[in-house]
Amino acid sequence: MRIIVCPHELAMGGSQINAIELAAAIRDRGNEVIIYAPAGELSQKISNLGLKLVLSPSGIELSLAWARGLRLLAQEFDPDIVHTYEWAPSMNAACGFRSIRNACQVITVLSMDVPKFLPTHLHLTVGTRQLAESMKRNIAVHVIEPPIDTQANRTVDLCTARRQIRASNEEFVVSIICRMTNELDKANGVLNAIEAIEYLAQYMSIRLLVVGDGPELTRISNQADAVNTKLGRTVIEITGSVLDPGVFYEGSDVVLGMGSSILRGMAYGKPVVVQGSDGYWELLTPDTLDTFLDVGFFGNGGAGASALLSILKDLVSNPATNSSLGSWNRELVESKFSLVSAADRLERIYKDAQFEPRRKGAILLSILRSIAGLTKFRMLKMTKSLKDRAAI
Image 1 (spheres, rainbow, N blue to C red):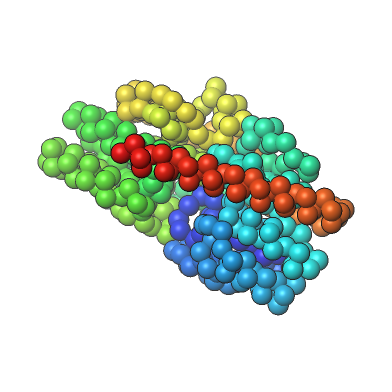
Image 2: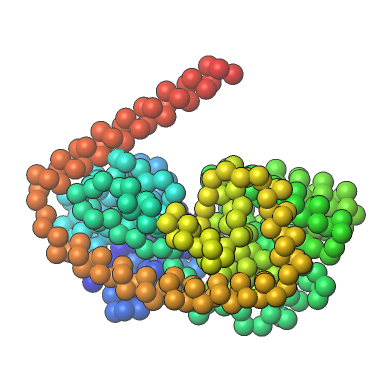
């Protein structure tokens, strides 16, 4: 098959990393794959994997220029499949799809909420069972949990990794690797972690590694500086963006995060604490696994820094538990979340999409409904924004 894969951006993030790694896995099965996406720091990862990148205009909003670029690429490449990630590329491609001959579109949304205005005649993949069960569509929704390359993401030399992050044998290292943004309450979760580590640092040798970039990095860095000044040593270390954060996963004792970041921590054989919105924190164990398999590695509502502090206290005082949880996490990733099994499922979805009957009338109706739904969504968003401004 000939496939164009369209991540919404190439900034560091789980959705786009999954798109790139799955594209490489599909390519390795004998398919021809091109990435169509705007320039970003993950361009280097695409190059490292030997994939071809065609640069697009920005893909995070509706864009005639983006759609025109895809149309020109499709005319040259003649794809069988156009696989779009997240809502904006999906809508851009779907609305101009009649000009892309013979190609079928597949959509993936890895956000915690799937927009209701997406076209219902297209195959859709999501990351959790709960999302799939909540969708009402003409075509079945597929579940592909965010996959992990278990060969590239594994602990190889712990001593070297600890040296690279300058961790002593006595130091307990916690890492949180994410985009520093208010989306999904990530930034507030990082601030929770800083508060919990600040407390523990009064009684033990501990350090928090905050890895990533984003619009809230300055706020987080200011809080880290305040804590480090108060304690007289570097307890909170801000690294900024790192193309390959593997050494931070490998060198840590515990990994905090959500979504694919949690899965990477598991792949490195670490105990992981799942972060959510509004102060949610939960240790992944055999007892909590079923919940996360349903809803994804995320949650809503909790006690914030105090909840995380309680979890970390238990982990610090029980090294044997840490080791057993880390081994269990690695085994779980290998059996359920491997890149190989995800590529198997995705290739089957591509073939199903190719052989799906295409009725022009139904497709046109689906797209018109989708455009109407998107228009309504944007009007409601604009109205809310105007009301918020008026209230200031």
